[in-house]
Structure formats: C-alpha cells, structure tokens
Length: 424
Image (cartoon, rainbow, N blue to C red; front, side, top):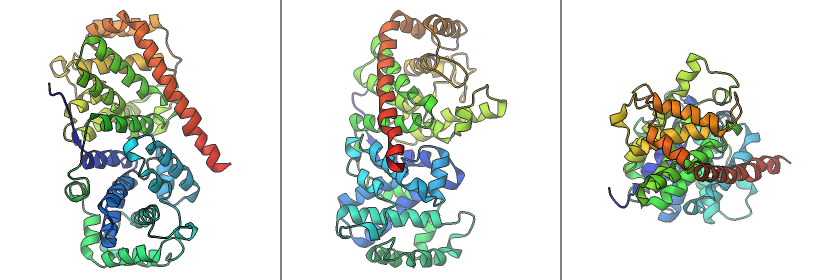
C-alpha cells in the first residue's frame, strides 16, 4: 500500500459544501452558488490571491454553524433571529481546524451590515465579509422556480436599495459591473457549476496531506453529531473504536489514520436525514427506514467524488453492509468487504449498543457480546473482528468512552453554551 495520501482541497471543500446543502431541496448548491458570486466580485475587485482563497473557502462553509435542517431553512428564508447564532457557531467550529482559522472571522461577520463596521473597506476582513454578505444575500434572493434572466434585474434593484446601509457602495459597484452580463447569471444557475468551480476556482492546484484532511474530518464529525443530542458523541466513538481496533489488528500507520478519518465521515450522509426520524422514540416505519438507508449512499457518493479518498469512502460507507449480502444500501458480499470495512461495521454496531438511544438505554457488556456474537455466527459481521473486540474489551471500551467524554465536553461546554451567550 502507498505510504502517503493527498487530496485536492478544492475538490474536498466543494463536495463537503454540497452535502451540507443537500439537507433541503431549496438549499441545493446554496454555498456553491454563493462562492461563485463571491469569486466574481473578488475578481472584479482585483483582490490578492490569498484573500480570494480565504473568501472562497469561507463561502463554501459559511453556513456550517446552522446545524439542523430547520436552522438552515430559517437562515435561508431571511429569518434574522438565527443570523448571530449560526455565525458564532461557524466561527467556533472553524477555529478548531488550524488551516481554517484565517476564514473563521469572515464566517463570523458574513451577515454584518456595512453601517456597523468601524473599519474601512480596505481592511481584508471587512471587504471579505462584505463580499460574502452580498453574495449570500443575492443567492438567497433567487427564485429557483423562475428563469434566472427573468429575475436578474429585480435582484439588482433590490440590492441597490441597500447601498450604504447593508452593503458598501464599492462592493456593490463591483457587483453591478458583472451583473450586466447574462453570462454571469447563466453560469450561476448552470447545473455544471461544480466542475466550473473545481477547474477554475482558486484551489484547483492546492493539495493537502493526511494531517490537514484529518483535522477537516474532525470538523465534520462535530457537524454530523451535533445535529441531535442523541448522536452528539456517536461519531467520536466509532472513529476511536475503528482506530484502536485497526492498531490491534496490525494495520499500517497510514491505514490506521485513514480508518479514523473514515470513522469521522461514516455518517456524513445523515446530514440529509430529518431530525424527526433520527430522534424518533419508537421503531421506524418502512418509509422512515427507507429514508435512513440512504445515508450510507450519500456518504459514499460524496466521498467518492473526492479524488484520493476512494478507499476511505468504502470504509466509511459500508458500515451497514453484511458479509452475507443482506446489508444496505449496496448489498455488498464478503468478497467486497476488506478488513477496514469489516472493522468499521463492528465499530458502528458496538458504539451504538454502548449509547443511550431515543428508544432504549445503553447496553451492558454481556448484552453487547450476545448481539455481536450472534451477528458473527449469522455471517452478518466478521467473527474474527468480534473476537478481537472482546479479547481487548476493557482497552477498547475505555478508549472509546474517553474520546466520547471529550466530545461530550466540547458539545455541552462550548457548542450548546453559545446559544445562551448569543441570546442572553
């Protein structure tokens, strides 16, 4: 196996941005379209390359603090009471990633009106925040059910009326210069916007390694888990379990790091699943379970679109597959499931059984053993991995719980506390 791995940062951010917006059909490509508008304005303003890069990344992740589908929809519909909360949360989450600390301020201020700034537009944070503020506003003003060129003039007039109060006159001037071109509006509404940004965006030649990828995986672990109190530490537990079992199994150092990243991304597709299903106290009906089954598919679809992450995509998305071919959603069989996928499947079940769920309390060791052993005997999961788990139960369970305690502390003491700070 290769000793290193790398991915294109633009490819990664575009794909992850897309899954964030897939939570609601009305939000589809909102952040991608906002990033396109911001790039066009930045180009017209002739900003420095490093400023454009930061603005691009901030645009693709600007709504990262709107965790639930309801929050995202409220922000999109101009419900201003949600503005501060998701901006502050976004800043806090992005500051957890060393390479994103430079964009966190832009996200924090992307709804800040021009009249409230006490610094000039020449300030890098001010101009970047104002460009993102305008780009976000324009994108949310578009009626997706109406032909774009039949509404562009109305949108232009709408933002003109906010000159000097919400938007700086220079930033509006840059936008007006590009808004007269039909090409701009047609590109903005094009179904090929993703490849356009991938091949022409500022990160088209930027490659990141395993460490930066890992820190971005940690970020998305928070976004995935914090959708619900019941899942607030689940991904942290699965990633920890897969990591330590990979070590005990004897996988290489690179594979161990990759499987932890896969663990952090394994429920990425749950970003599109409504909370009312995830938090349902009773059993799911057939229709609800059909919706839940899609989450692994979306995890695979998104991660596979990122060059270099194909193996991580398989490990992350195959956690509901079974060796006998009866799992979902790909109906893989034993020959399709390598050791990483098998470790992930056992890790996901084990951590789920360790946790309180809306419909049951956490299980004890004997109950967990009975279930996993039966799964092994029925050829659902690899019995060798089950045996590895219980041969090292104390070591594994202690590590999982310690990582979940860290995640719980971050969730309660920092993430949840922000709401009280914003609204007090």
